[in-house]
Image (cartoon, rainbow, N blue to C red; front, side, top):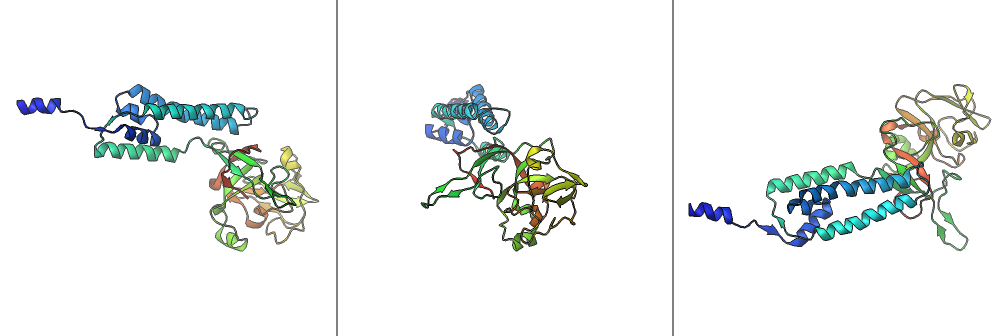
Length: 293
């Protein structure tokens, strides 16, 4: 009986307060949750990712004018994140091995979800000019950074890519022999405009793009493109006699700078699975991220 009473009154072994901060760095709200404040921990776990996602969406979405709302939401999420870490400085009960497995598993799932589904990219080249400007080198040797774009990675979850969309795609979607021929690295990101969707039959005549024999006049961004039939070493659509049918599950992409763009005229179509997302806002200059060609 005595030993039973001793076991019931044994204090719970606790981690030092700084461990709580570390845990909350990996999973928001984990420290207060483990310390017994369940609702507070769940609130931090839900609110912070949602706030970051909302801020990213506002920065990327063309529906929201300007970037102010997005910046305000992201600034608020940073402030709340700091407050959450301060509140996480508390002793928390030691985890058993099962608890650590659950913690690591939850963290890995959270990483795979990859909030906020919006990502900035920098444009270093001029293959999409004048729509998106690349780096500009001045006569004094200094370089003006190219445009930055926000990419909605969720854009095609429930919809298919459309003609005229400007998209970012992975170069690993290009066949190995084409990558080797044009010295294209397999792990880069390119940005181009979709000019052909599955089933389209494309031709170029007198500098204009045709689909099934009809000139493409919509959307306006696509209708403005002018094509020259004398670009060096194209494989597809090399002259007015060529036609190209876009296969199922793939897209024909061309840079707006049609005379100086390495695109589907050289390496063919890109599988839908290799399209990262749709460019929605251009000229966001404050974040430097993955480079696109």
